Image (cartoon, rainbow, N blue to C red; front, side, top):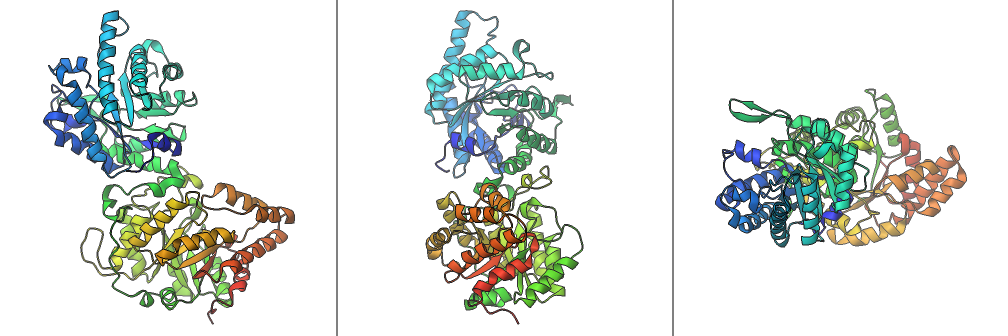
Length: 626
């Protein structure tokens, strides 16, 4: 569990809540006639298992099993005197299920059942007391938020918000109303009117839940967006139907994944499920949350089947069966401490490799015999780089470095991809998480991200040791494992912690993002020196002033000093701008070439002449291939 607050998490991107508790307990054999809240005391392991399943599916906010935990609702089961014990136990069970994760615990509070529209003053006071007692218990038990959900009376919800702010002034309050299929709520009020009233009452997050499915609640949610507070949506799994005496919800998990993306793209900040939803619904929504959170993907823990390759790599990866020097040409040079040189090319957007092969031959004539092929950089659609690498290895004398990102392949698909690379004779890998689809031409494409770069490194390192992710012995692979790093990362401490995790997971070489400021790289090299990992510095020749400004302002981890951007602005566009970009890249490489293990150049638009020109300043450090 990190030290970040829920407010910090909300500010950093969308969040995923869990799904139904009651309908899931019913599916697991608990009759409707039982008090589901009382199960916190009588069947705690059952409740803990539900929470665990949602956390395992990727939920980042877990609601306590206390929806009906106020004394008025509990009195219907003869349990009014156990209200405090039930709510305390609810928090303890949720907290135990989230231990060691980044998930938050929210105290769930439902309506009392008092009909506020026609209730007497005395009845309203009793309801207020019941809400205050429950909320007070939840706050004292240490919840991260209070979730007021499934309220049908705006009057009661306003009272509940007031009580929650009074009892826990520093605890965020989420307030959700029930809406009908026409996006109307209590008294015919629409989403915007409800949102405005809830905000005035003091709610920190507003939204709707239950009552309707994702399509209907989408209309509610977008009507609340832009009113001044984050919006939450937790729809049912469609409208319920009775089939052979059982209540069935018909919206399948895939359907939820589609609407999750739609909601988040429309500005909704928190999504989850209500009646009829399951951990499978949560798991399908996880991809949408990750896609919209984009640049923060590598903060996420591995979930689902990838637990075996968790990013919290507490134990070092097992040793490879084959020494690095014997695995590839690159591995041999790495073992001998030679200066490493590679040029990064992007695969063609079509199926014709003729131009790329010509570019590789030009690099060979310049002395470069190692190229790395990116894996859909900037989420672009191109020829599969594994096919490109295989063809280049067969038709030229270069040795490719295959980029492998976790964006597009499931856990099983990644294992198959790595084994396929081994079978094709590809021995050098750069393991990365990958740019989210929202950055490319197909933002609706579903990202997978079963693991991040650390988890994927552990998979590959395990295969090198002859052990698959399930712990079974297998024929060992012989990969040289490189990883990425951002010397100019905004959160420097976090980047260094990640690099430590990557080394533990099996990384043998670091290939940095492009660096232009020698001071930034010098500081990075000083910081990572204790890790003992060789570093290849990334160099990207600027193509124009516009290109420089885009990289500086839009690409995470990239920082271009103002003096270089000013130089690019002075020379204009075209050949003069490209020549100035090459000079800047040469200066950057010349300043650090004595401190790094190598360089890899990323020429814009595959301009290999620019890459060779940059490398001229390092000829004294490397032995060009003959």
